[in-house]
Length: 102
Image 1 (tube, one colour):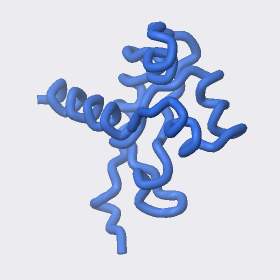
Image 2 (cartoon, rainbow, N blue to C red):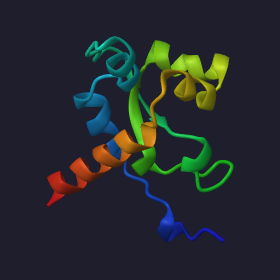
Image 3 (tube, rainbow, N blue to C red):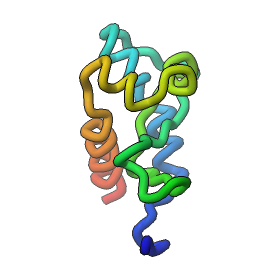
Image 4 (cartoon, helix red, strand yellow):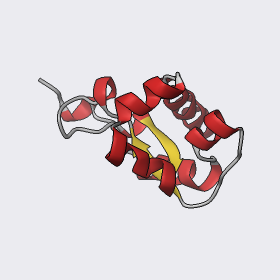
């Protein structure tokens, strides 16, 4: 059973990611620092606590076009094709945010 205490929700973190970080997929695939139309994407699959429970600590910045790839192709398949684990970057962002708050 998942407790509400285990669920990380932080709107300020989401806003900080969207305001300061480029699209993760554009950077990985094209080496391009895209800061346009950034949305906060909650990672799915093994990064979720339940079917609809999303952790803010497991999110990354994606531009609108990259975010839409998941609706067309599925998130797991897209990450497998480009060969990255976005959870590592999500953890780095969360750690950076925690350090900033100290």
